[in-house]
Length: 243
Image (tube, rainbow, N blue to C red; front, side, top):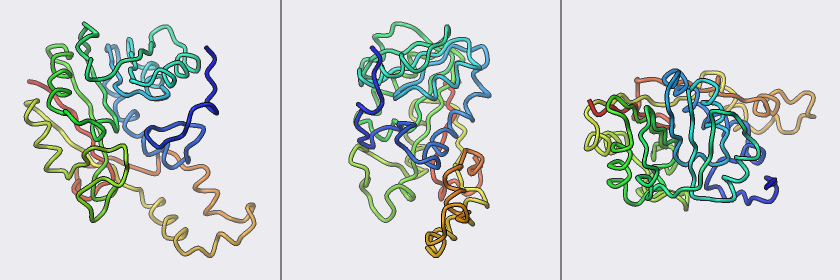
């Protein structure tokens, strides 16, 4: 179908690689980098895959990856952009997850659960779609970072953002074993954030503006996952097993 990214509106609902800042892409990609260590030889489902960059990355390690998203236009774009023998993309609303009629070793849901109204149904369907020893990997933003000082999300596409205890409680009602990590800024990124806030470097010409150059080349190495101080992290990622 040859869908062009320029024809897809950047609404803020999902990451579009060619329309997003390197730092935001890097932050979102961290979840896929973490997940890749678990997918070797596995059948993987990527829920809310968007334009498909993450599913495509996991396909380099997994036996098979299927990406789903409710947006037909973005799925057409993913099919054109990413083509591998062990990778497929399908239009599917997650409320119809059971219609897939198959089970997976690993189900990923990165930065999606905050968009969902009926999380009970979603988590039940995910549990039912996992093989007996399957793993559910889910990430979401920390409301303390994404909507500081508010009980309601700033992002109009988010239904519910979570504190760490709320996130744990939600997952514990459906899975027996859970491990949670928090995403943090690395020291180098913290330093450059402070320099950027000073503002004085924006007057430098581009060849001399080392702060701007850092942000232009930012990657996932600017962040790290940790079990320490999760309450104040940027994002949460949970590894969930039924047994």
